Length: 73
Image (cartoon, rainbow, N blue to C red; front, top):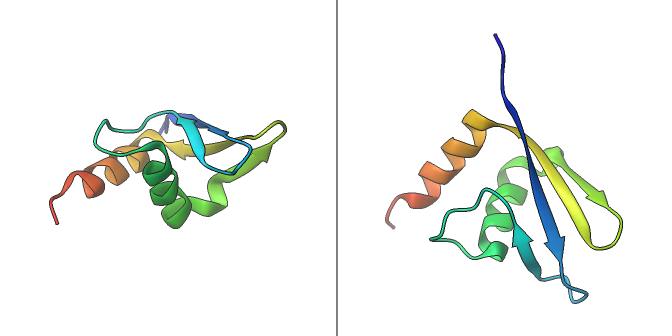
């Protein structure tokens, strides 16, 4: 079984606010998407230099998170 791994790039402002993050839906702000990922997959996060970081997750996991956040309520 071949699981497609996706790297989600995060870029932070000097004040810690997320200014850019990949794979997010238009419904969520960059900070909201980071909070979803951090709450559900914090072990997949790796900090990088210069205010950046990455999450390494499977495509199916990302799609599941997107579906959960798309639900009303």
